[in-house]
Image (spheres, helix red, strand yellow):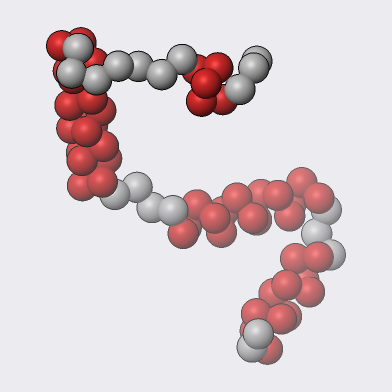
Length: 70
């Protein structure tokens, strides 16, 4: 960790918890930028899967089998 990063981390630790949460949220959001191309590909995949389900090409899996008991 370089000096600037260490200094920023030390200063962040002195913030109130809600201020630290806000800072973390800001930093994380800067790393997770939406990608329209990936969103488009997921929409197409979801449409293909729904069409396959509706035509009986694939079967659904009960939520309990995937997530366990609620």
